[in-house]
Amino acid sequence: MSERGDPRRDPLAWLRVQATWRRTVLLRRVTACALLVLAAALALRPSEAGTTPVVVAVRDLAPGAVLAAADLALRPWPTEIVPAGALGAAGDVEGRVVAGAVRAGEVLTDLRLAGPTLAARATGVVDAAAVPVRLADPEIAGLLTPGTRVDVVTAAAEGGGPTVLADSAVVLTVLEPGAGAAGTAARGRSALVALPRELATRVAAASLSDQVAVTLRSQY
Image (cartoon, rainbow, N blue to C red; front, side):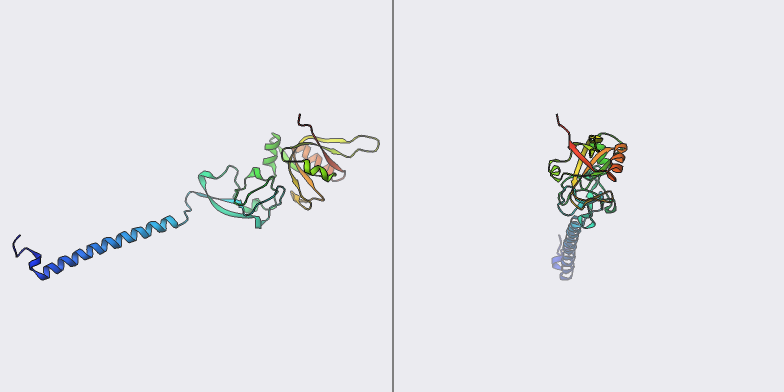
């Protein structure tokens, strides 16, 4: 290269080359920093894409608990792992009865709560319902667990034996004193049992006027 073409021989040209190089390096560094910041922001930003709102329990719940607003929260859940039957509105859950123990953070589904869906699954009958039966003997409550089969009977009439209102009812849960199911209040402990709807209606009607109790069925 001739001395005339060599920028180092021309101070002004050399300064221009250096300035251009510095601007190029600075631009690359700024671009790299901007890309890093953008990547970090995208990684930290909660993604709403691919999520579904579900109702979760915010604290541990005991079997038979009646759900209140303070027990629930609506949170986004990855759509691909949302359980079948998950409930998506707190208003659909408040006032309903938990059929089993629930852990804080657990997604609530239709089979975790007492109702027609759980009753149908427990009895194997599509048209089934849950009905509370007051326990005349509080000691029997300790023998009842979800899935236990019982007969629902009325007290013996004078000079006669007890009447079986429904046989092979399935216990969904045991309600604590003061707990209510389906908008009703319970006096003492009650068992929430699943029955075909026709029998459930019969038991509910009888319990308004007669003393109704349950007897354990043999598991063999």
